[in-house]
Image (cartoon, rainbow, N blue to C red; front, side):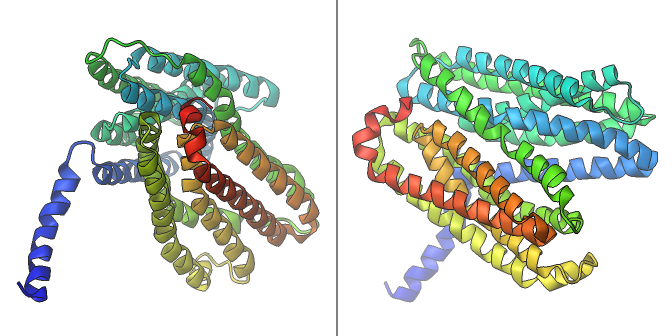
Length: 441
């Protein structure tokens, strides 16, 4: 057989092999593609829902609906990682050890709802926030309901991915966005739209929880062993909550208090536009790392340390490859992008913000590897370290306004990337001696 004929046969078989990987149950490639469809469809539907609100109810209606959505997403999604990461560990560990996971899963779901309600009440009482057209009590109720729905959907999404129920995970994401779209289409006024949107969020959260519990119970029927890692699971909740809840308040402090006192007003348009384009850069890496985390956890729990180390380096290299070209492309297109938004002369902070976003994307796999090893405290300390650097740099660079904000953000993410990458390298080098305790640290 000649080299040419060998290559031709290999190419002819490539579609068949690719199709087999895409359709194989539990395939990571299939999971990534379905997650992209689910998350992408969810974003499109949510953006479309706000456009419908603006068209139907005008600026005042948009202010009412968007206020409830904004605060609900901030509170719900800030609490969710505190329970979704331990839940991923619960499912991966239970499957590796042949233990039941239904009861600890149910416990984490209920605890997540309770935590959201408590945090929502504290924030509402202390800040006195409300929305136009809604009385404070009505706003607080809608906020608690919608934030609970967002949180429980995010937690169960992580659980469905850990169970490799990728089709159900995609359905959960699409239903969340579709519920908001239907709510704003059927409502006769902004107040009704917020009530319908809150109802749809909690309904989708409940449906997602039912799908997860069905998946978990179906697999638990194959074993009679009880779950043995309650102490480990409970110990992972506080660092996960701390790590997930410090970032957004820090951003709020920097923008509201520090740069509000700058001699020249900060150009929030540049920051908003940069964040919109960075979401495209972060989209695929975030999904890829979410998909791979349960797989890495399962390898650690099963003691497959060589395979884990190889997979860790692969995900780091793949993440770099996936983010390098888009990041460079966005930087090259900066003049064209800014001219479209009529933001000529703001190239310097825009490029710095893009670099900072790229560094945050590069940090994804390192954090994933550390969490898979059970080092949840690194997640909390890393985020606290980022917040401290960002606050300090912002105070020092406050007089530079928008440029100072971009420089502070770049410096903070550079320090964060250095911290997590060094920590990952050290832990991987020490993997063999600590492997027996990796799942319990």
